[in-house]
Amino acid sequence: MISIKSTENLTGARISGDFWDFEELVHALHHITTLDDLQSSYEGVCIRVLGVCYDIRLAAQGKHNIEFVKNGMQKDIIKSQNVIVPEQNVYLSVEVLWPELLFTTIALNELYRLQQEHNNGHGWNLHMTTIRKFQANVIDCLKNSMDPSDFKLFINMLQVHQTSIVEYAVQYIDLLNLKFIEMAPEERQANLLTFAYKIAFEDTEYLVLKKQLLETASITKSPIHKMKIPLKYPKEIKW
Image (cartoon, rainbow, N blue to C red; front, side, top):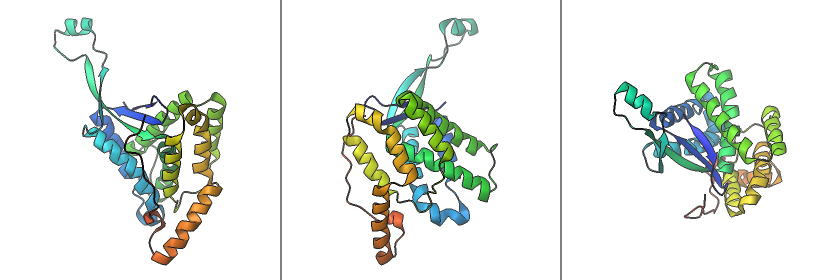
């Protein structure tokens, strides 16, 4: 079962699960980012979500972290069944920066709705159920990472959020990621809600960046999500 916990310094969250948990989530993320006729309008958002998916796939291949988790097999059970079995399972994990994970969670809400409306998706689809469970895990993690009053506001924001992510300037998430990395741990906790609002409601900083990107895109004739901005992530992140 997938579990999500904030990292020690609240820089991001650690997504953990076994190989099959990650395989299920990877397939679900690929499913929900396939939008047929709407693909071009949401291409940047889908690519961004698939970036998180790629990290999860790498984790499934053992290229990030490996953990050992108790599997519930107790000595009396082993003795009564007269078998030799391990008492721990191998779990895999990967860290994702909080702004990135907040964006993914918010974006999945709209991608879920689009699947239902345009691709005849329904709530009983296994992939769609996996997506909702993943979002629920993120939100449960936030409940333990946010001030209770902030968490209530965050849940309300998810319920009323109506700003579309069509042709979203995904480069803005890189800016937020880098700002979040530079913060002290106590600042990160205090600003989780602020960053969620920045992503969901297109603040002034976002609108200025998107205007600049659109102006460049009109000259180069390239899609907005392919515009490059000079940003550099640190080689090591203190999770």
